[in-house]
Length: 178
Image (cartoon, rainbow, N blue to C red; front, side, top):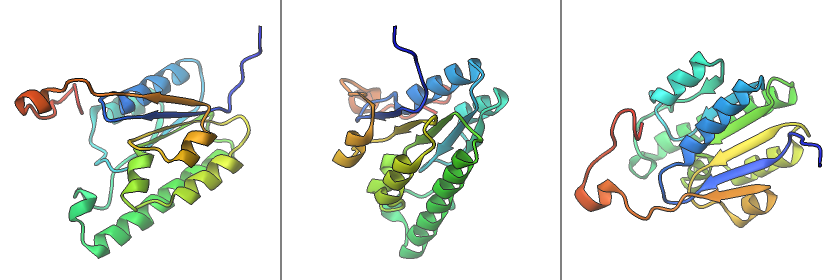
């Protein structure tokens, strides 16, 4: 039997519910096995219930944005601030990874940050190519580029078949969607 090792790259993408949930599950599993986990969220306010629970489990979390607006309604100044904020966040996680502070790094909604123009894809690719050999990395979001798909070892797509928002206008519910 092949010896298992850390150091692979995961993508959870698609238009369906479950991308962040898959990352949270992976964080819980890894923490339960004694791995050091960092969970870094992009494009989210930082007030979700999963962040609170991950912190209680000992997962290092980084979440929140300089503004809670959707990127398509941000002013140019707000977009520039968001880009600077998210670039610093990625560099902070990369520095901690290279310092050996984690075994698993989760970059939740990183693809959305790239497509919104508030994070450079090349910065993410450069990090993935230079990451510590043992570091497992999971990324989530819609529309990963061909370059991100190529570098990944896993790519799981969450596909929406039916959603209550589409059928009845039901919005997100506490404890279920956030």
